[in-house]
Length: 231
Ligand code: OAD
Image (cartoon, rainbow, N blue to C red; front, side):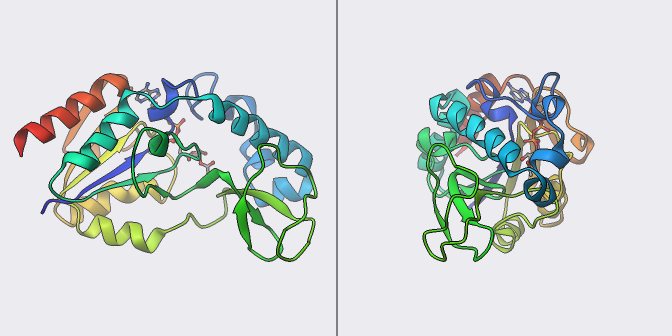
């Protein structure tokens, strides 16, 4: 049974209207990473950080999954082996498009985390500064997203999947953020065929066996059709 492991990034949600980070006009052109995506930034100015994620939560709630998200859900349903989707995205468009058990390595906008005791719960649409944790009552609610300097989630599970992958695909990610950027090497070492699907070649494009360029809503359904036709 061939296992397919898929890593997705902001590019897969771009055609659903959600901003990427490093493209022209992307989120990191408008906000400083150290201000809105680090624990130090949150400690310095929680209102700025909560405002940034509240705005992203509002936009993400209005976004619809696109043909690329739906094609990956179809692959999960119709492939004879296992299809594991690992995403760096904090939106829920894979799930909204019908995917199952998506691994959110950078957390999710739908989650709240207590910075004091580590308790997790569902985030309200707008998280207020100093919102209290329902478990320990500390005024320490934060978005349950992974910031720079923090360990991404589910890493052991992800490395286990990569070690068993027959096919590894990276979709819509610039390959500039580790550890995700190194997954292609892990998968190659395990003997997987590797493919990148992206608008432009990523930083690590030369590490892949195959690179397919174009918008995800076109390339991903075509790639999925090809895989399912081969079976
Ligand atoms: P980036 O913004 O770094 O890269 C987005 C990639 O998507 C680029 O390579 C684009 O060429 C590509 N792209 C844009 N539109 C596309 C489309 N329509 N179809 C296909 N590809 C398209 O976003 P990520 O790689 O996801 O982390 O960024 C990785 C991490 O960096 C994020 O999870 C976030 C960020 O800082 C944290 O905040 C911890």
